[in-house]
Image (cartoon, rainbow, N blue to C red; front, side):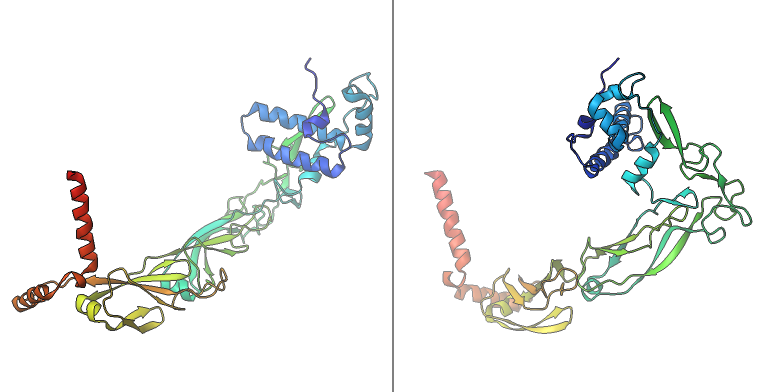
Length: 374
């Protein structure tokens, strides 16, 4: 016969551990090895049984005292104190776990919180920046109004399960140790519906499309989530509903790109404006503004317009971002013969000082080629 492990060692607590420490240790380990979370894992099932046996003893003052004095012999036939199981493990389990595996019982039935839902909301950049209040349609499980969630036809009601007596749990005893598991007949509800509701077919819930209004604060960005409390699936057997999480997805914009609170756009200008400078109207989300282009502006030059970005105060804090305009100097196309002649005349009047980057680049290339031939 295999030697049993020490109960304190099984739970990973000291011999002077408080009741709170024991419950905390059991809760953590039982969550890990519970059979419902490890289907088909015999090793996990055995560890869960060990934990359950240990906690039943250590949470009972009388049994713990006997165990501290006599060890496992206290509960063996004819040994030490000669204790037998009181069958109290079910209440201990509920006391330690509370609502981890369920939210309690209503009318003798185990109730379950409804599932959370996710909805992806597509927004334009303008709506994301300014905020909006769209209406969305969500398909979800709602409580059946015909049977008010009971699952039974009008004039009837669920009856106690004959296998578990309405407890939702069945107890298996092995000498000192007793183990509770979900009743296979009623699946833990404690009730059996003999005359199901025609609308929901005994489920207590049915599929329905709801129209909801979503308040989107200004400054949201892709990946942000808005929680609508209680708008998820209806709970089972009167349990509370889940939540609906609306996830924002901002569409690409033809002019602007966004990085956090800042906006970026490209501003194409002709090479004459780039060389001589001038005033240019550029777009913002609030309308057009004037941008002064200095002489000799090169492609890639960034101009910063303060406060013309995104106001993220409500969603992240930090105030309003900026708009960055990146200049792109365009080469003229579809030139007339006269325009080409003028450009050739211009090129003949130009020197290296007027194209410093080009001159330095060619000088660098020359040095590179020469180094290859040395």
